[in-house]
Length: 156
Length: 156
Image (cartoon, rainbow over all chains, first blue to last red; front, side, top):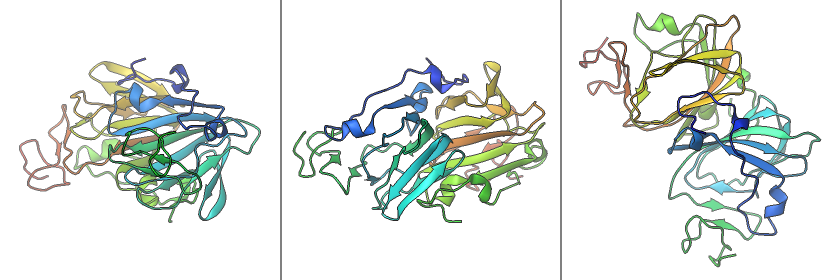
């Protein structure tokens, strides 16, 4: 599907139904469907994903990025944002943003009974590192760029 | 309104109801409301705008960017995308993307009878230049960065 300059319904794109985390974190983020809108349009400087998070799943472990801004915009359903400030509900039509470099881990959990659908938007920065305050996980390991590792760099 | 890590409804943000173009282009883009979601969240590497384009208005003159990717996602109503390929309709739930550096000017026109609401997403690049194939307009003028000028650099 080549969406360059062609209007496309995201649901026409193939979904990534996996999760790149190692166990035991992987299963906490599923079931989930991610569709890469930016990639489909040939974009390289920004990433835009259309994500469907099913009841009980979380978007990610709580994390923050060193060099990538993030913004999510909820299209349907409802998410619970978990951050250092506690919990807050984000409903359809609402957004929240997370500046690069601010060390407040965030994640979104679907505690509702219907799928939550949202856009995840960020710039892309090859030097970006993600930190996970609650779990023994880091992205990227200097030894294996693009891969998850233990905080001390050992691969999973 | 500080939306950092706080879920916010875009309509709670103050709207920019103007248009930065010089006449006679300005009036063709109005009435329009733009709300800067990324700015509200303290983001600097990406721009995310929530735009309401009223019937008869166009998003911009047809243009393309040298260093900024663009993606729009329609939330409500319907837009007509005008590009070198001709015209195509983008309805609610659809998106289209425009890679930086591809010299195919695009614009969105609301030819419907209800407001069109959409998200405009891009990276931010201080070296970006926008080219307008159909009109005597350029952004930026090397003589006046951040300002619109005639193609030969003369200010409006």
